[in-house]
Image (cartoon, rainbow, N blue to C red; front, top):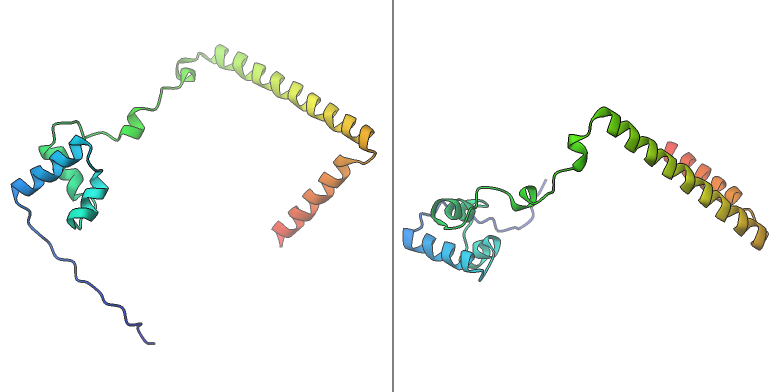
Length: 134
């Protein structure tokens, strides 16, 4: 087995001065660049190196993930069982009405265009199911 001619660059551990770290942190916190852009621009190899600097030396709160903290709490979390049952019954009724409406639309289309959409759809679904089983 031959190994293709690829030049492997050995990763080295670098020590950065405090001034350099503060310069990078300041540029990120001013909004000039993201921390991933700073990694590529300054050639910082570690994935979380800059993020660690931001947590240690930054003035902003970098301890939490902003995506997780901005998610709203579900209003369903405080539901009582009776409220949950009532909500689910309402959702079920809404789905029944939606199903009736869609069936009526398909019936009207069948009547107007003279072809059966249900038969075509069922045949396609059966073929797809058979292909998935193989």
